[in-house]
Amino acid sequence: MNEAISPSPKVSKRLIATKIFSYFFLITTIFHAFTGIGNILFYLTSSESAIKIATTDFGRLYVDGYFGYIRMPLESLSITTADFPIENPKLFAVSLTLLIFITSKLPILFIVIQACRLLREITSSYTPFTEKTTRLIRSVGTIMLLKGLLGTFILQMGINLINFHRRWFNNPFDFTWIVIGLFVLVLADVFSKGYVLQQESDETL
Image 1: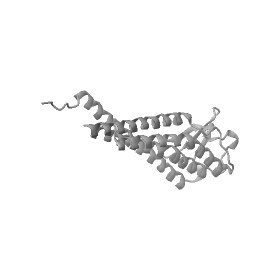
Image 2: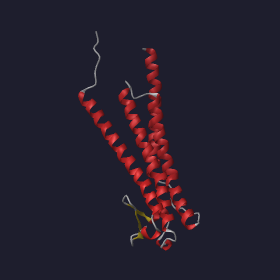
Image 3: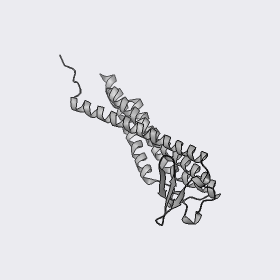
Image 4: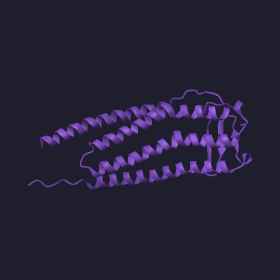
């Protein structure tokens, strides 16, 4: 009589450690997202003189907030030092924080949530090749691809339209996110084929 083979303790511990890390990362990501909302409320309730916006000689932008500050290259927003001082600091700070929240923090939060669901699905199933696993991987890849294709474009166009009343963007594609997104989508296809083969194997048995 064949005995059931249980997973080795080493593998189980690795999976448990991975799940703990993923949930810790999820909590951190949620907190980071809510700091953005907190900064938006801070800017809305502050006077324009209280909102500090500065640039450096190295072409970097600094925007102080209640929960830390925003620091990024001016070129990532497709603006230059010639656009400063900002005519309406409150509008600039609110629009920048909101656009960063929409184009960066929300997609990353979605990806982390889907990754946690993926780990839970893999650990609770006897095989990683399931329909739900394939769907979760494909959704992560799609969000990554969209972030790479549209994230920087929306950020740059939004900042320029709202604050400078011009339609302007420069190098709007983030090829790192695009390449990773395409790779994850290919991985989803591999899991989809694995799911089909798993079904055929189960039907044969």
